[in-house]
Length: 424
Image (tube, rainbow, N blue to C red; front, side, top):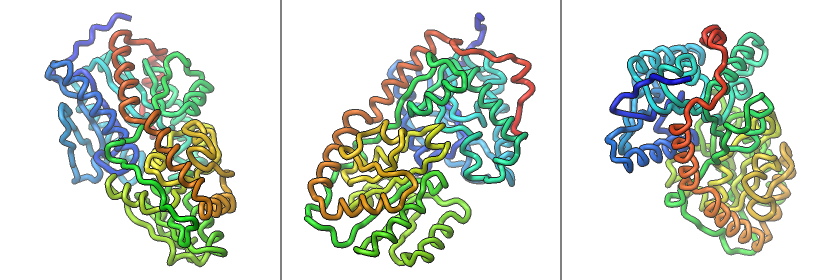
């Protein structure tokens, strides 16, 4: 189909996301890295065109905007008692913002903003890039357990996901596990590109473990969200098991929703380790790096559930843990083994087993050579394969291809797009 779309003079690229930016969460770090790379590419072209970044306000009155070179940041409200209310509010404001605008390329991260673009793709952009990090049909039930029983809502989510996947000209995902999941959903492998997450090596400095033969008090660290799929409670259970023989303490760093922190402390009290568990809010990269260097081991106990096994993910905490130089214990899952090698870059243990984590901790306690090998090899591996610069190069090549060859996607029946308009 020939496009008659005309882009404005201010921007040719829009990056739209139902996420809060700036934030210490991994999603916000990912967004910042990608948007800055796209903006620098525009600056290098000397066209005076900026990248349009559209995100969500943290609160109804908190319209914090980033001040990145060559980026226009628009913050739209998402107000309401429920997630659906907030999504509908954001979508309404997004439709208003999009009026009279058109772009060469629009990149989205979820169906919540993606459906608005998919419904009007021919008028809004030549190429739509769908960046798939997670799907609501899989992830939402971990935050809202009752969602799993709402078959009508789940069906609408699945249909909207499929519309966005099929309407997109290109799909970006950070994990080969997610790539295979999308292929299993009928999406052509030809339009799916794996671009892993990266780490900012200039901010994440390297520090080797303490050079002592035996660790008397083992300092454990978990950082990231406290979502159910992360398995944070397993770190507390492993701490309790380890303390039957030796001393240790656990620091948990990350944003907590609702009763997440209290539930973890309740478990710690039940297991008799409340005094050894410290829960801190999310930290800026410099402070988090300092905490990584203070730790003797970083724990990433991902669970073996559909979010990690079927959908897949690219856990930044595993990459950052390896990059810090602190030995890491994580779960033996395809999503982690796709990032590194067991016994070389990290210790991968049986998923869901606090005892397996404890046993790995005991190995690290007395094996200085193992600690040093994991530290050295982990850092080297991340430097060689997981810098943001490598990810940026792949992203920019994709955008260049999208502009050169628009409309490569499979366009779904427009009647279906009009029928499934919201998640109501």
